Image (cartoon, rainbow, N blue to C red; front, side):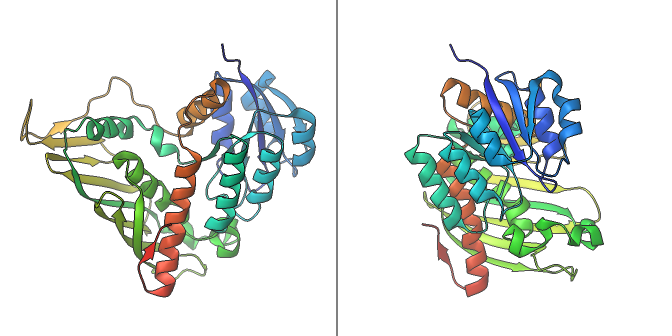
Length: 345
């Protein structure tokens, strides 16, 4: 029988999605206790409100927390440039690691961490939480059942608001500065769709060609726009548009064509999933997914990660897949810089 585990939440004043992680930890049945590493004291009160008696300690030093508490899982949410040494120390302390993206400034940095995690038989899971969305799991099952046949191609877009980029307070934050974030929209949001493309099709992206730009002209040194063509290991071709274009909200879209049909996913509008198959029940008819219950967000993904660590079972994202998503992003950046197609090794 597995036992609920202790989780160390290692962050600072600039940690991303901390409130969502506190809610997820509070809800996770496989998490029995939480210790907070909060050097600035930014999150202590919020953690006490969210976690109640689950919160058993607060530390101002991450290494002190790791040494004194030995959590089974370290949940690391720090700016990209600060994350690698904390992840390294967590792995050295024999922790599994769940890391807020992008968790590095280069794919090489994360690759070293992934190899270290592999050598210690620890999970290193990147927070690509859309994998747990009900419509994504339903679409994956549809593809894996063979109802779409051989996958031919796909197109995707993930578009957020340009409005945030106009705010001076945003300009000062780490994810608006390439030297601290590693990149812009593509590494912060577009990475989710790149990962989903591989997760849905069970094929890795093997080659990329991309462009990036600051089309909005705001005083930032990250891209607000990226476009990429993708070649997959099974021969599938695809495209991605990733950008800050709207006044508010999101536009999301994934469409996948196969030899025996096609499907379409929208994660912020109804219906979330539609498909057409060429054979079988309802052949040729547009069908819509109607779930009895729909889940999404960080809570189910974090719960799945904690459960995997508690039960020593398959995590919601592997070390390999976490690294592959980052390699794909940095491959697109390299392509945009060099003007040539890049093999994703």
